[in-house]
Length: 382
Image (cartoon, rainbow, N blue to C red; front, side, top):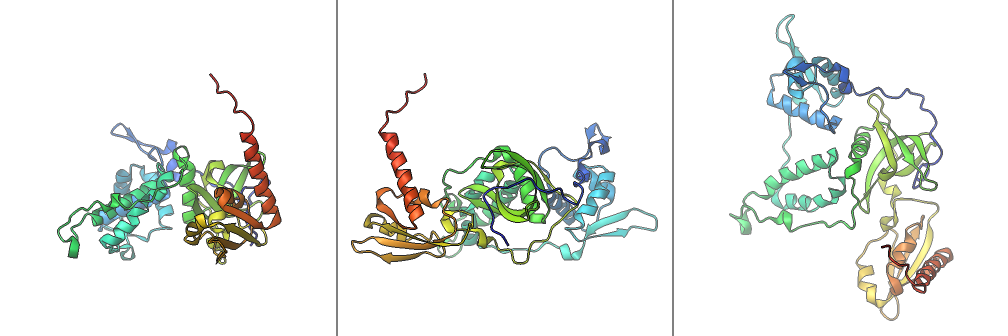
């Protein structure tokens, strides 16, 4: 497997398969009007996962089954659309149909294998999960966030039950408001919820994703076909690690640069058996695996010794003491794109020892920063 890059390269080769047809539920000319209300796909994000949840909930409420017409009415689609829809959802749900009488309508219902399973969660477990819910704030407005928020609301019900032992009789200690994850400068993806929904569905269902992707090096857009292997939230920005089909390479794609996304409806791809998302992480230093790992040595003085000792910034890190109370951090890093910025954040308390090119880069950055302070600031615009 070849290492990923931070963006896509040359235009993808044309797929041997034709572009996927529109989702059957999108056919606007398939809409009926009953009672003055148009029928068909509801406006707004209504992805396959939400449709599956709606259908599952509906059939769970009616274990004896419902006819095509009952299902169509409840889901606000035409019977014609519902038949095509069932073909799609039967890939995900185990549905059975039974005849009510010879020649009569058939009832669709869930197979006994689809019976809901209870998941027991203790209050402490609910609080632990609720503490991390803000991790997904950059996704607010997307279907993925709505699903996570729905799960969080269910967990709140568990967390607010009366406790036992020392907490006996305490119905609501509001701990979900007192265990928080505070993201650092999260991105706002409110304007990219459609792209996020398409990407999430592609990753979850192993479906190819077509989109226009803006390259970082020259700003040009190209039409690419991606097999998305994993969704990554890194420094509160959303990335996708996947196969650039045209290049035959596994790369890292930034959601911010995706446009006109289209999740395939009829196509799927196989996840490579040897794929592991951990192979594409460099700890705190990015999701670009880069080339051959090189030895990096950084010395820190005693003012930041405790901070460095208590952080796990890379799997290969080794920390050894220095005379005077400082520490030396040694790592094996394959891509140093973000390493210089990280070192500069320590100011005068850190010094790169090796490799020489990283030393030179940090020196240039420091010299450039100092030069800006030797010049008078430009006047503010009126």
